[in-house]
Image (cartoon, rainbow, N blue to C red; front, top):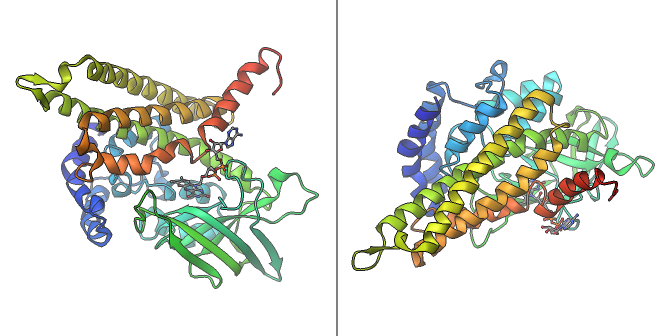
Amino acid sequence: MIDEVREFVREQVVPHEGLLLACDFDGLSAALEPLRLEVKRRGWWAPQVEREHGGMGLDLVTHGRMGEVMGWSPLGHYVFGSQAPDAGNIEVLTEFGSAAQKERWLGPLVAGEIRSCFGMTEPEHAGSNPTVMSTTARLDGDEWVINGHKWFTTSADGASLCIVMAVTEGDDVPRHGRASMIIVPMDAEGFVHERRIPIMGDEGAGHFSHSEIRLNSCRVPAENLLGERGAGFAIAQQRLGPGRIHHCMRWIGIAERCFDMMCRRAATREISPGVMLGSKQTIQNWIAESRVEIDASRMMVLDTAERIDRDGVFKARNQISAIKFYVAGVLQSVMDRSLQTHGALGMTDDTVLSFFFRHERAARIYDGPDEVHKAVVARRVLKAYGVRV
Ligand SMILES: Cc1cc2nc3c(=O)[nH]c(=O)nc-3n(C[C@H](O)[C@H](O)[C@H](O)COP(=O)(O)OP(=O)(O)OC[C@H]3O[C@@H](n4cnc5c(N)ncnc54)[C@H](O)[C@@H]3O)c2cc1C
């Protein structure tokens, strides 16, 4: 199956990347719709979702392998109904949603009929410590009244619902227990989509964008609480474990694509008559280093996926932190070497490299910046030496 998916991505999906690079998002949606139908017809839709909810029900390791293959193209995950943040939101709704919430939101989300977003980060506070947040939700009769300001809400443009993280509990509760997740329909009164944030000059649209939003006394029914009151961070942790496997394997797919482009360029760029770029030792070093780093990344991530499948997210948390910063770093190095190998062409939008470069630098920031994950790993190591950090 993985081989067939690989062929499908390279032959059917990649040819549409030009629309993405040209920012023709209407044209892109229209072009991708038949591909999404074809993926459903072939039984490859929503690989990460359990079968009873309409997906393929793959375990984390197999989904990881498929994630790499889909990641070859920036359009891959969307075509297979496996894109962030919907994938994570589907997981949360499956595990913590009430029967009514599942009926209203889960079915259409899994089917790809609607999209969702996740609003936790606020411009005024350090997102790397989200327990400090200003967004509040207070119960007024049988409604939550939500006030807050969020940004980098990925895919909010055109989404139908936002899972909003808001403080619902008082100062008497420890910080980790103060916030709750609440489902906010995007057409609720008081929900304002302010703008799509330009990412290094590219504001994108629809699924391929990140927004700033405001909740101005936004009212939603009390039953829109997702899970228990005060359980927001516990649920978010649960969501992030498998999510990091998804991201890491997607990054490995991107790194493979950049690597392939680097090798093709090294093999065909003539720098003097009869002398190819690949004959230079620096380029050979980049190729060798990239090959080994990508392979090492894959082994680490699949090993972590296996551990999560076997022992659960909590026991694998150290490994999850390790792959998050290691693979994001490998991705950045390989992208940079590939771009450098392409010279001026690498700076243009004539290849997909510039899109990857613009949008994937963020891999070292979202879902926890490098430095936070390194601290987690180091703390654990030092503990064995009797040092408590
Ligand atoms: C492309 C993209 C998509 C995103 N999508 C979403 C989304 O859908 N929903 C959502 O809610 N948020 C989203 N985010 C936000 C993301 O989660 C935050 O950017 C991230 O948590 C970091 O928070 P911050 O940007 O406020 O940086 P800060 O917390 O201000 O940190 C800035 C820098 O300080 C350093 N630093 C931070 N903490 C430490 C520490 N403990 N030790 C040492 N150094 C440290 C790091 O280098 C870090 O990059 C997205 C961000 C990006 C870039």
